[in-house]
Image (cartoon, rainbow, N blue to C red; front, side, top):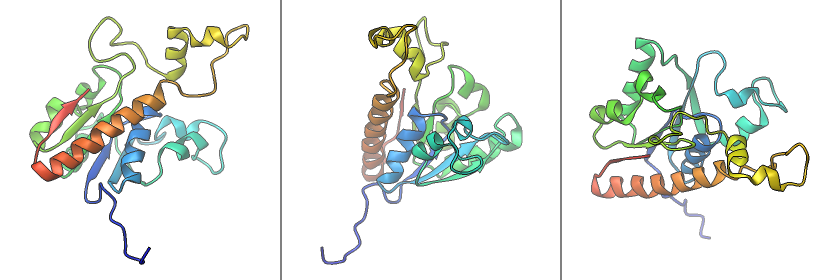
Length: 200
């Protein structure tokens, strides 16, 4: 190495992280690792719920939260208010990527869905992450990793009675990696060719 600074592939890309818990935050974190500027939007008061998951190396900083939110700046916003939505909409106007992982229909009610944000910024790549997809008979079901482990039968194969879930995120990790790869590619293409899109 000759000491020359290395430019990361997503330098100059801004990511608006509207997601919570694991899959979405991990996706945004990986984009930050690749050089993107990541702004995480959290609820007023509680913040991301993983802030309250023990153990706690410091108050309000659960280790799960810390493991999924490096390379980010956070802002607390009440998306249920007109003022809060206006703040997020202003951020969306200058963002390249927006990521959300709310239950089906919640993003629409909060005004952070693709149909609301894309008209504010037609270059925005919008990513919506869910456990069972946004259409179909299970679209309204919660999608935490432990639920998906039980649903698909992995829990029944641990040999424990009652069934015990494996201590690895079998569904969240592949989801966030897949979402990150798609957003990474999309952000680079958008930056180079001025394209945008919606990704569920």
